[in-house]
Length: 538
Image (cartoon, rainbow, N blue to C red; front, side):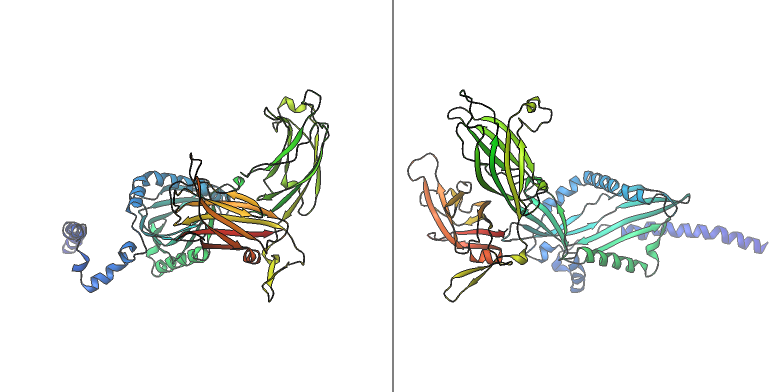
């Protein structure tokens, strides 16, 4: 009986003792852990405690280069319940095709998210640094810390067995560099988003397999964390960049010039009779799609239904795969609106580089295939097109100076070639007029004059406007004259005033392909202007 009593006593007392110990722990020890932390000023901390606390101090406190953006954290916190659902829904849609690829392989019958939430705690910005650049880019470096309570449970059915993997308590510390480039005058005002990491990320998380915490295996925890951080650094650590296109290339906002289209308008045949005497006064108006530049026109051929022009035009091409040349035929009128004789389009993808191609186009009323007026015979237009792509950098024009300072041209293939000169007037600083300060910039090159928009009542205008000039030979001995002027509206006298000018030699532009500099304005006290000039040959 003594032995039986001892066994029963042990079996009863052990659970009771464990339960009592557990309740004592909750009553006295766990309650202490849940108490509010003691907040003390930094000056009251000893050196050891201060050294331990320094890594957790926000960067806007430690470094004057970083700015505090509590308003952004407040905005993200208020929006986070909705951002959480939106992000999770996007993750599910993006992962669905990937999961479907594994169905039927390795005995996998299905893969599904049982639960997917990023938790109630959003990422926080500990500070942000903004770089001032001469280029048309915006560079920022935020410091992001995310101590989330994310919970991701993934269920996979393998040979009729359910296998669950759970990711929880995700902690991330990142210092990315975000570059918005190029800045363009189309919403959202930047064409690409480029991201790279400036430091090795710190990542911590819990991982459970079949309900067991595999991160508790000795040695595995640190190995997994280190390998994940290392692989992310290999892929995204600066100077490696992940580029995300934002703007559509059809608008031409993200495209740079790639070549020149040569158009020869030869003749037209059997045009419609629009005048009372059975004649027409035709001319052709043409433009490239995706461009906001003015259309180009041929001369007017008076009283002629079979006019012959043989006139040449040039256009700067940004995307030969999507752009089309639009040709519109009009009947010129002295007083009333010009009548439309017909139109047609030519996709540039039909052209072979450096090869001329002749097109005989049947004119139509519109490009709508269901337009009944298109059945009417409106005559034909004959044009010849040639697309000359720009050369690569390795065949760029080089310029040599002799002992007397005279420039000579050296081509990569031994031949002289024309091209396009792109002049971007970015901004000006400290410009001031005697009568008024409503600045605009005027660009003069080889007798061709172009102007920016007028910005009223400012000494630091920002235009960010680009102008194109096509030339038949490298402009080695030419200069670009840029003058900042002020314009007053409504008054006929003293309505324009010069605020300073600059003359830029193009030798360096032709030799290097590009310059981006700030210039002191002549005849201005402190005025400066920033200009970017590019040269591309064909």
